[in-house]
Length: 281
Image (cartoon, rainbow, N blue to C red; front, side, top):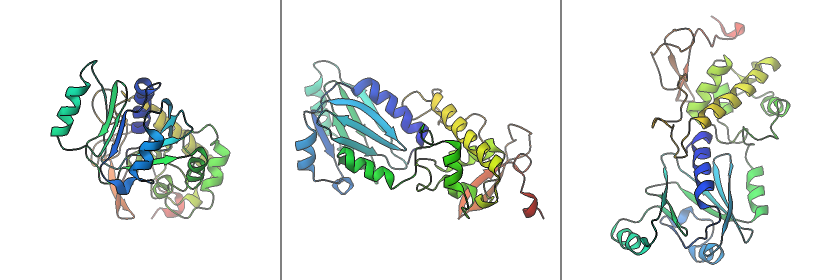
């Protein structure tokens, strides 16, 4: 799924354009992605006003004026489109939509349409506040939550025998860090993604915590609200190393190398991210 920076970009734009508007229509093509049947979804959501839009991890949460939460979980390749509807053009918009293939997800408000054109894994959940909190407790905290302190971060990672990259991407430890950001966080912290977490010292975990916040916040600042960087590229950092095998390290110029961790690629600078002394051959 898109990472936290992309989802936060969507959240900002949704909060700007949808708050105060009422839901006029709501459709989900793949109904296996719903947690309630479509009829109940319509009963509880249609006509309701959106109070605000929240992000928790990679969940987009619409808070409705009847206390319900409408939760959108995007899949790996999903793109959310947010389009303003011109005054008086709604009938023509509906005719055009009827002649086109149905989007995977569509949410029509007073003057805004929110759609996902194609998706295989999109989920749409209608939850009470209690149900949402229960689901959130079953996964790790948002890495940018004010409740996640350096001390709590160390406690969550303490004695983990997995690799650093696997731990960063573990949704039971932290919500919403994908492969790209895990590589860039490890690079920013000067730690090799293959190092075992239980080998890290307290100072290294503190450095990792601060690097995580820095990388995610900088990537968010590059957003334009459309799940991409303001220059039209992905939200990845200009100094990041994810996917840049053979290119010079932005710090020292050493070629970036690639390794496999649990059969998935990981990228690192052998100079800036040295092996721990015990692992050196």
